[in-house]
Image (cartoon, rainbow over all chains, first blue to last red; front, side):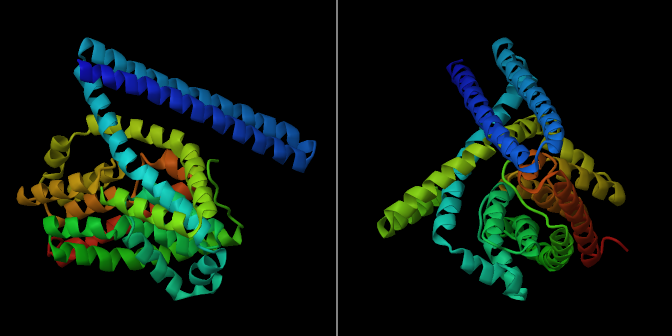
Length: 228
Length: 159
């Protein structure tokens, strides 16, 4: 029981943290919208406020959903409703996993941002990097931990530092294909042949599709963002 | 644990090299994490529900069906929807293999598991936007299917 209580406590805490984060995000977004409206003049004003309303509505819906979910878990714990309890345990387990990876990851990304110069990224992963850019992307992906949750924020940092889109998509794709710790694990359970086939087929395809996608988006002046 | 050590070590070195830069880096880290926390929370909730809705026993039961095409389709489906850490997914693959499930089906499952993420959608769209997220995942799905087919060919399971 004490365990459950602790969990409840955690849920409540989670919620407050989330609420706060939501609020902060809303404020940031509001500011962005304001800036945009200021920049684009009167005509765009209506459109933006419309979009803002829609966004607020969506946020409220998501918030309500989260609230219902947390209430469901809470009540499940109180009345010993098994499905709800299992979901709660899943959530708890995954949250712990995240807590193991997330802070370190973002700290490393933060250090990367201050230490690695824009010119370095541009030179090795930018327009002029050529084929070597893809090699760097795959090496970077291979040595990273934690999969996509790490890959997306890292990709954004690379984007800001001037990496080419196709190189960046290769990095994200490759982080799903060839993370070394994962690969060792895979080979030990499914055999080396399985892993080699996967590498040989998936990696070229990842690079080719990334080039197509990257070039296409570059033509349309695509911009990545952080928290749309 | 090793990850913590390495990070700590790097922060230490960075701090010795340049305090201001390190503090700035840590601030950036905090800001980035705060921005993305709501999406990650949403993702965790999805995962917790999905893992309950599709337990491992269910997956191994359905992938074990004798029809290979159906197996690949289901493997792709399960793999695309769920997200599992590698230390669960690959042992599960090993178990499936022992049960006689073909390499092709396992490949479809594990490859989509790693490359296609429906539950990570709320996270990915924060960075790439809806459209690119969907395109990227569709491309990954295509790649995973080709990988599965190639695996089937090499292990002599197709013809």
